[in-house]
Length: 105
Image (cartoon, rainbow, N blue to C red; front, side):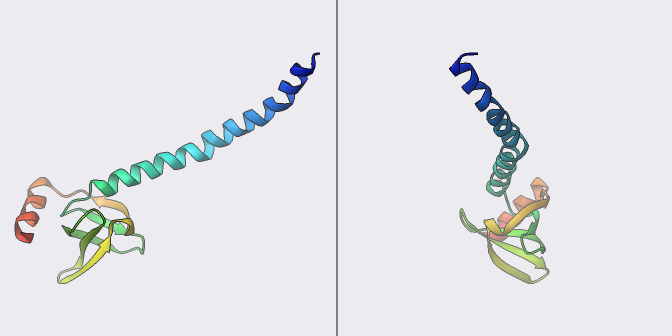
């Protein structure tokens, strides 16, 4: 066997292990991170969300790219950053979101 062939056979298992680790851990994490960023961009008034702190709330107003106002119970509204949202629980119906926008204006 040539010297190059022996070197390839020694490096091949390392490459296979890296490929398995990439497919098992790195790629799925990137896909989840991309889906989370997309969800944060698409937040709108009326959406019910779960915060990183475990609180359920409804988006009342989107202030700018990074801040929004959440209502946790009637009359309890807090300003929060989009990054505090861990997941969307329920998407707002189109007519409800339009009604909230009109009321906020």
